[in-house]
Image (tube, rainbow, N blue to C red; front, side, top):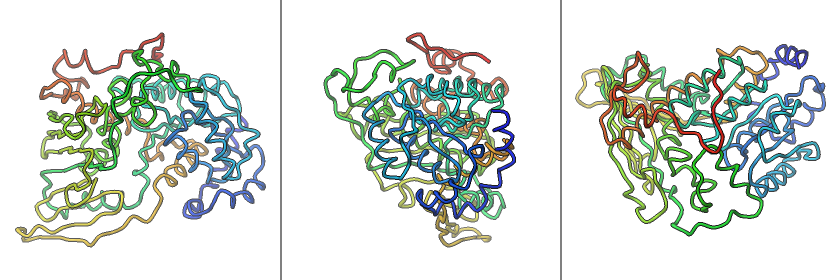
Length: 443
């Protein structure tokens, strides 16, 4: 492994020409892979491949010299489906080993890089175990499912000194960077309010249905892992896990870590002073969910306020966009989302500014993977676009909003002590309780 790593460090230049990589099909990479020696290959094992985990793998396989050698999922039906998908992508699946226990995949010495694409409540355990096993990691967002997990994951990454990229791929899109540069240039004038919103008309929870036996091929006990033991219910499983506190945090941690991230980046502020939140199950009171489908959160900073506004079942968000970040300045308002950015002038200002819409022109997920693989090879961790430290900070801010909602309190944050001033809230919400014999290892 040492000689292999040394060679990989010397071959970081393979990532050059990212536009070509993003635009080229998998089959077109055969000519490159055939000319790359076995020592240059970088082998990936993907854990949790039903949703973003497989999207991540697909982007990884666009990069010359990156191969998939292992797949892991607790649902055998998902593994079968993904093997067929890989065959359609002209991937030789005969050499891919499959598992339903991630620990067995981590024992595979051929795996260099691990993708963590599981439900949120598994992220901390798998990422930390992967680092301990000597693997570099691409972990889906949110990095942790509690503030305590975020801290533990950062300590593990630092202790084992591994490359860990978190899947907040907007950080790799050029138009997001350009918009933040514009915000920080000062031309918008004094920014007093930052609005962050997520209106997702297509998203809805599952119906209220009876508990049943798990489907054939599903290792439900392993899927639960450290979460509370409950009977299997199809409306809590796969995509719908995100609407239950046992496993995730609703839209706040699903989309919020992407969007709040840019509110914080644009204003150069890591954490708020106080947090208050109101919301509820207003859109789908008859469907199966615990997290709020409608939520408004107010974050107080020294010189500005930031609001989070989310709603399922509605697309008609602020500025006629279903998601975005608005930096509202005295001279103009910059509106930014995945589609692009523009500046709307402030009519009352003598120094009004405006800028026509600038559309996104790149594939953020592909570029995020190109950045990650280049750092795996160079070992220059400071070049990562979304290291654990950055992802842990925004995940903490998202968790603050959920905790304010769940506690029903306006919360004060002690930045020096990195905790709330209300000890009863710290005790109840800072760390998830691990069950069924699982626990996070201290490092």
